View 1 (spheres, rainbow, N blue to C red):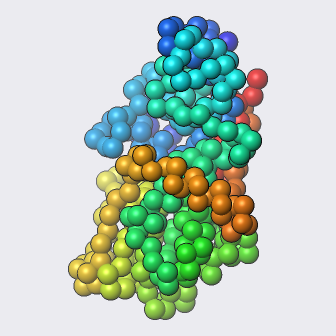
View 2: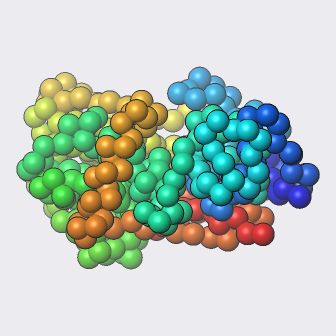
View 3: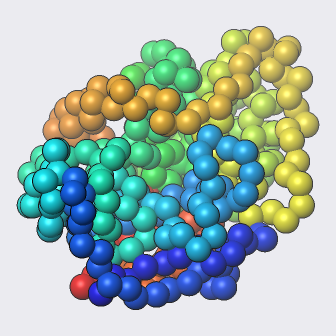
Amino acid sequence: MNKQVLLAQRPDGLPTKSTWIFQEVEIQEPKEGEVVIKQHYISLDPAMRGWMRDGKSYIEPVVVGDVMRAGTVGEVIKAHNHPKFKVGDFISGWGGVQQFTTTNAKGYHKIDPTIAPLPMYLGTMGMPGMTAYFGILKVGELKEGDIVLVSGAAGAVGSLVGQIAKIKGCRVVGIAGGKDKCDYLVNELGFDAAIDYKSENIYSGLKKHCPDGIDIFFDNVGGEILDAALLKLRMHARVVICGAISQYNVTEKPKGPGNYMSLLVNRATMKGMVVFDYAKQYDEAIIDYLQWMKDGKLKSNEDIYDGIENFHETFLRLFSGNKLGKLILKVLE
């Protein structure tokens, strides 16, 4: 039997247990050109909250009644004349929140667990890693000597953005919630400084740690933090809009930044970043990540929780901040 989590209704605010339907169905046999994948790990990402909305976006919303969309890694256990994959292959794709998926595997790619652990293919070697790499290097146009500010800095994307910037010779300041996360950024990941938005005034923190302003703001949070960062832009600064997790569950219309005129005064730019735009270049990032990890310059952190039955509680950790690094759900038997 195949345990699945379906989207039952579109949430208003923070998703509740009634947002989902948990069910067990028979595993579908593969048709011609299909495979059956036994999923080992499911990626939990803030973007999933946006995929539940019925509105125009960079990707179609999840249909009510369908399996919840999610990135996955797993093993091919059955194949019916598939042109690309065979039994025993480990592959990554959009398998959704379920134990097994029967699919034509379009858009999936083969992964090698001898090169990196399977969970890492959902983090550093997966969508968050690609987002961080191309977001800071291509969209942010990172240059040696830049002063880089990262919000959501202890998360899957932010922690990698900061490390890449340090590797490239920049000063990096992270914004995170809680002393433990801030200590992790500085002591484990090598950030130059960290601002604890839960106990420290964000404006005072920026004045203290970014007295000369910032060249790049990589934003995963939005809201007040984005507004505060805009006041610290230097001439020709770049603001990368990767996400706005502080706004994903608000029930009223999200507020836009009040300090946007700083973009004009400083001839700065603000640009959105969607990782799928760089799909043809992913190998470039993977090569660099592997080398950086081999050289001890970059750390990958996966925060793994067990059991598809615990999807809802684990998913909410994205918004409570009760996690460190890449949030992953391990699929148990």
